[in-house]
Length: 252
Image (cartoon, rainbow, N blue to C red):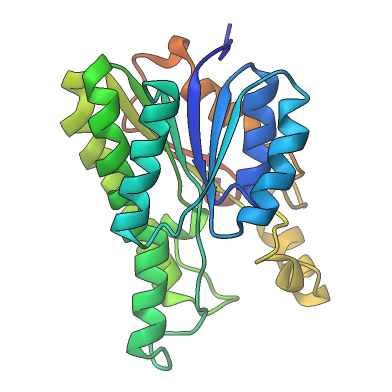
């Protein structure tokens, strides 16, 4: 089960963090990859390593807030591989302030990067999937799209990820007739370039021990099983699902 051999998987935010981790996991399952991110030099480094696993890799510089760059990436992907089977919307960034302090530019930046980009990517690549009546779209949301929090004021991030969750449900309903499933993963606390500084503080470590039933952060690779399952042929009747992978954080 869950063999992705010769599938074509497009992953945004693939230059680091969760996106890079998922790219490696998909390659190990046999999927050919299209890696999208702004830092093309990092993608080229990853491409060399991933190709050692016996898969084809296309690296494309792409700012996911730019419709033009997204549409060009979709064109190049279809030109290279002829189809798209899997899309993982993993790119993200955030300006962390509370509702009383956040200015318009900080709000707009976060919404554009974390929510509007998911719409633009889905529009571009689902139109390719529709031609083959097959697709798996996986949106990386967050536990912060499901709940508020008392530790970090980050109103735009909560709002954007909450939007990703209901975008997932709406897109799942719309795209189901075309054989395309749309699901979301909501990670809990995982180390990435964007989170390390906060997660390493003594205050936040104590917070996690108190609020996460497993009393620890997620480990590298612990999102992969969920993503591979949702990307698989076997998950053909799973759509509109919101899957927390959070050590139990949203269960209590």
